[in-house]
Length: 472
Image (cartoon, rainbow, N blue to C red; front, side):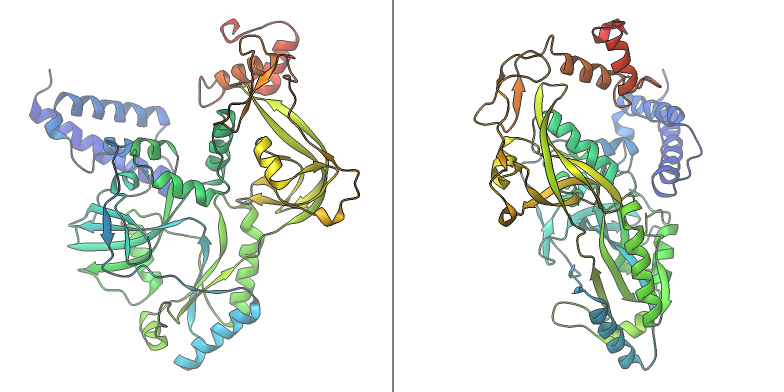
């Protein structure tokens, strides 16, 4: 058996390699090793720490999986207030903001123009290079201690190369769009509540009392500001972000240093066009004076800085018609109604269907077949019906009721009072449930059978080559 001394040495080397690999993968998007190599290093480190618990360090990668569930979150009083920005909703308001800034300093200053991530603002405090406290913004003065949950986010460094006496940074926790879509799909399949948008999903995930749940949610973060620092000084926002990047933080790279109203407005338009294609949600553009000395000249309002503003994008919506409502049967037997729509272009793609979640959702919005509806994409990715244009009803619209029997197998369905989902009573031989179960079994999140997607599963079933998972 390996000695304590050798185990400690090997564990330290593994932590260094794993942390480097994590940064390359989660922050730099430039992995050097395979997932298998990473997993084997992580497995070996876990074995060493299980053998000698005394060698476990607070910043070990194994500590990102979540700890014991809490009864409640402790309160944290922010030393530096986590304020908000003044919002502008038009180019005219943006021009007015830029003109006022220029008038104060006597010239067109440079601004850092950055995407405004639609997430949850948090603070990370490091002492002597180690993460000690992570907290939510709260009301800007008092937040909640969510350190253990934040540690599960793999793009947050637990230890910094520079062991400064103090460094407090501010960032935005978010849920990537693909992960949001997957989470809602999983919840809907299980008959659980779905999230309205990635921001709500991120907020709900970060405030879990059980950090193990947070660890499974796939959150990420962008760091965008230094709140406090001892041991270093910077003259500009750009310089400070470059330093944070050197310390392993995930900072927004899609930012531009610009001067002049025309250039800044052009950049806002560019980001607006890129918005649908980004892997994360943005709800606007942040415009910040870059030079700290000029920020001081511009000053502060009572609750917001005069040197920064947030241009807010209007939500893109479209009108369309509900042609029909069908029901899909999921792996667990949940019947999910789906609206078939007249094809319409919204947020960068053509939409012809939208999930209606459950009968409670349909009744709440009073959605009927034949209705004209307002459509948008939740988080700019998942089509959702926002409202019904009831004033356009002709009387020909048909109210919808869930079927009393499963559309796949014909067996009765049921709905309990404490659950929103309607379920099929025939899990063992319902064709739709069997098909979904085999699809799930073969999927990347389960057995990861290469090339065996829904179309192949459907073909194998239709040809009678398989009837259940074990036939594979």
